[in-house]
Length: 285
Image (cartoon, rainbow, N blue to C red; front, side, top):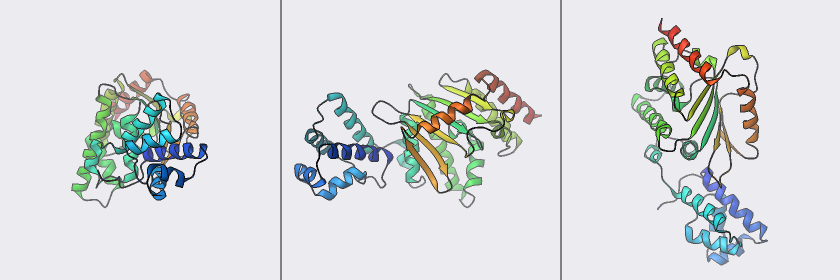
C-alpha cells in the first residue's frame, strides 16, 4: 500500500506519542533506528507523521519503550490502523484538499460533535439545493461538473447521522443564518423545513442564538468540537482565511468554554424548532 500523500492529523498524533515515549526513555533516533534495523530518517518520518508506521515496527518500538500495558498497546495499534485506513471520501481525493480529509475523518469517528455557525448552516444539515448555492458562491470560478462533485461529497458526509451508532451533533445556529436567503426564498424555506426535520433526530440538538442575545462569546465565526473515542484527544476546529486550524486538548478547552457561553444565550431545543418552522412559514408567504 502506498504512503499517504499528506501528513494527516491522526498520523501526527501517533508520531508525537512515539516521539514522547522515545524521549521519556532517554533514547535518540539512532537508538530506535538500530533496534528496528532501519535508517534514522525513516524513524524520524514515523514521528513526524510523514510516513505511517506499520504494525511490526510499531509493536517493536512499544517493546523497546517498555509499553507493556495491553490496553495502551491496543490504543496504539488502533490509532495506527486509522492512519492506514481508507474511507469513502478517498474517492473524492482529487476534489478535496488534504487538510479537509482530517475534518471528514473526525466527523466519521466522533462520538459527539458540538458546533456554532454564524454564516451558513452546517454541511451535515444542508439540502442539495442549499449546498449547491453555498458551494457555487464560494467556488465562483468552478465549472458545473466540479460543483456537482462537491455537492455529491457533501451529501455523502450526511450519512454519518443515519448509521447504527451515529454521533451526537449539538448545533448552535445564529438567527442570521436562518434569515439569510441562500438560493432564494423558496430554497431557504425548503432548507429550514429540512432543518426542523433534522432537529427531530434523537442524536441531534439544534439551538438558535437569537438576535436579542446581543454580543456573544464568538466573534470569529464557525467552529467545531470533536469528541472521539478513548485514546484520542478532543479536537477544536475553526476556519481562517489562511486555512483551517485544528487544536487538540487541553488547548481545545477554549472552544468548549466558548460553546458553553453561547449555549447560555440560546433558545431551548423545542423553542428553537418552533422558531425555525415559523421563519420557514414567513419565507413561504
